[in-house]
Every structure is written in structure tokens, then in C-alpha cells.
Image (cartoon, rainbow, N blue to C red; front, side):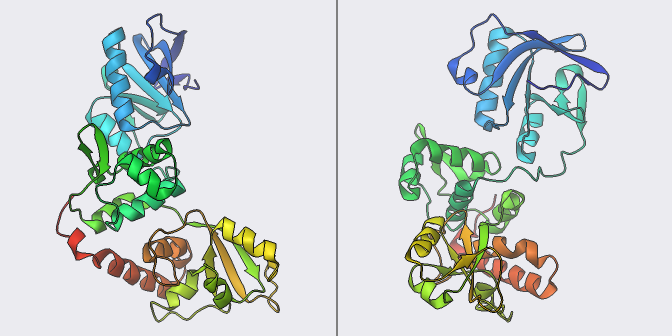
Length: 332
């Protein structure tokens, strides 16, 4: 438990583990210690690098207060912007650093960064894959187990993906009896995308250069991506070498059959194709190319220094977010 030694000149003291039994659901996710901030006794619940979900934070807070009759202070590596907003609105205390703390039981609020997103709080690749399917309206009403089956993942993994997204956009989920499902309610796709955008990352894992022909790779399951895909959707010219996306498994297969050489360094006189391995594979994509939103995310950083590309990408994003009119009649 690496709490700061003090906050706003108030010493932070750890006194040891509580004698009161800690429920298993709390002990699995938090290190619980008794302590004090200044002269104010409290209970510290440390979650380390594994950021808990908001429902777990609220349940833990209520249970520890009930058992110990002391304020609870959460501590760990990071909380998302949305999590901090909800916790402050519910008067749930936390300390992340000497300049980032919310301690209403002693009247101390230090939230200099509340207005800025935590840029490290990206969704995991598979959670991002799930979000894109929700955004496209493809998996409405699916439960955790049904989502796990679609994704080829375990129920526990799918549950984690639900919680990652729910911590930022709870409107995307609803209760069906005792189970949580992806919402069937209509939502504004533009607003939801903008809300999640600070937590989305490029799907591109690594780039290779190959002597293999791009069209031949596409026939074997690759998808056009990068500038090549954008050039087919705008007036942007394709790059010298076409770009395709593959899974890591596809790349391994291509390497095994030796129908082309692959290197991380471009040999211009021999290179025919740029090959991108992706962190996740789009479940719904266009014929022979990656989906438009993943394409936008893969090129967004590069487009920051290219005005024509930036305009083309912005136009592509607008078309993609507006093409499913049925998802636009609702609001957040």
C-alpha cells in the first residue's frame, strides 16, 4: 500500500489490519488497513494497479462503513475521469496522489486533474472490440454469457469487458432480471463515441514490410487497412505500398508457408506491401477492408500532422456514425 506520507500537510498513518472480518469479495480486490489522515481515523482500501469497477467500489464502501463505522478512503494507481466524477457525486473518498484526492469527511478536495481525462485509462483491446459492436448496434440485448460466446472468450473475461465500458458509459448496459445485458435502448452514437474516444487506442499492434502481393494476402483473409483503405473511401491517394491488416495467427501462417519475406525494416526496392498486425479483429467489416471506425482510430495520430488526411478521416467518421439512423433517435 503505497500511500503518500502526507496530503496538504496532514500526515497519513497506517495502523495495521482491522480485527473485523473482511468479506471475501472485498479481500479479493482490496488490501484493507486501518489508519488515519491527520487526527481523523479511517479505513484505507487499496486496489493497486487493478482498477475496480464502480459497482464494486460502491458496494465495498457501503459494507466497510457498515462493519467499521469509519469513513473509507480508496487508493490505487488510477481511476478514470468518469469514476472520479461519480465517486465525488456519491461522497466516496479517494487518494491517488498528493494533488489528487477527495476527502469530504475532513473537508479536503484536491482535484486539479478532474477536468482532464486520464490518458492511461485505455480500454483493453477486447473491451474496445466489444464497444465497437455495441456502437454498431449489432449486439443489443446480449448477456455476458452470450457476448462471451460471440467473442470466443470466457464468461469472466466478458464480464470484465462489460465493467470496463460501464465505468465510462453505464447507459450502454441495463438489468434484465438478475443479469446485466447490453442495452436495447436507442442512444446517440456521436455522443457515446465522443465520451469513449479518450479511452480508445489504435488497433495496430505492429507493422511489417513484405515482398508478398497485397491482393494475394487479401484473398487469404487479410483486409485492406491504413492509407490504402482510406484511399478507397476518399480523394486521398494511396501510399507507395498498399497496406493490409492481419491477425497475429494469420501472420504466423503466412510466415510458415514462406510465400514472401517479412521484415520490420523497409527495403524499398523489394517491399510490395505493408502488413499491420491488429490487437483485435473487427467482427463486422466491409468487403475486403477494415471497418471505418477502427480505420479512423488506426490513422488518427498520423492525421494530426496531415490536414488532408485529417479532413478525410473526420468525414469518414461522420458518415460512419450517421449511417445507422435507427441508433440516432435516442439521447444519452
